[in-house]
Length: 201
Image (cartoon, rainbow, N blue to C red; front, side, top):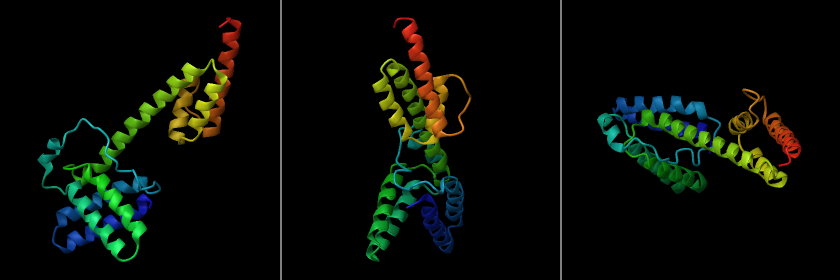
């Protein structure tokens, strides 16, 4: 299931809250859906997996009047059970899984969830970029090992490959495509290998 389809489920939940007279919760979910649209094409599984963040749940208790993620998780779990009972087991299981992921965010208000997820994902992306650059630099005297790392890198998204190339090559501010970034990495390794030979390393 894509995030776009999941957003449709949330919109239905918002309508339900509105029918129940909880316009405040309906507004929270509408705001949540609006934030989700930035990630419409991404896959739902794993998107909300909790990451270690410095903010404790107690920080969010000040906003306890807002709809909290743990309550949304219960609603999504119920929706999954309804789908399973209706014979749509695969979709029901997907919602059950995302409900479990959401429950890990506890007292976080729904309107703040996407910001929290994006911050954690950006932190993980930055760490991955730094680690790839470190590994490439450590392996640049070993062609076979270096190439294995480049092949591994090629399976990553462009928002990781490009910055890794920038970090390793130290020549351009950005690259227009993954193939260009990977080619630049290989070219720079070849250039450095020739320099090492001249220096007798």
